[in-house]
Amino acid sequence: MVPQVPDPSSSTSLSLAPHALDDVEHETVTHPPGATILSEGDATDEVILIAGGTAKIVAGAAGHDLARVSAGDLVGEVSALAGGQRTATVIAETTVLCHRFTRASFEQLLDADPAF
Image 1 (cartoon, rainbow, N blue to C red):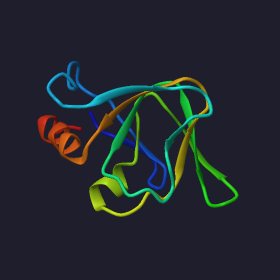
Image 2: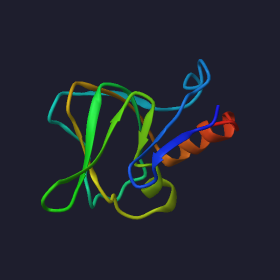
Image 3: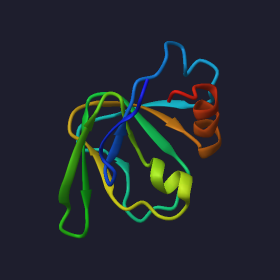
Image 4: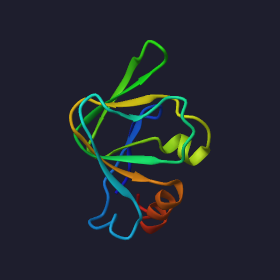
């Protein structure tokens, strides 16, 4: 399974092996339409895997649309792994189901599935 990268500035789309999340600590969260999933400027180590629904990625004071993400897409991985602040905001367009990982649990997932 090779990750597909549609745009390095927005998200990473991937496929996980069945049961890949079973042994990795994470939180499953549902966001209603219009909810902010990640905020530009935040300093955090969370990585988000979109499991269902659609969200938009926007940046800047004017909220310029950068991309759309949906099931299988990762958001927040660059700032979580490299450190630093979020460079964009992610807003749910529909009801969005997410799996939230800390940097440590995301690295555990990467270690458990080298093809990831």
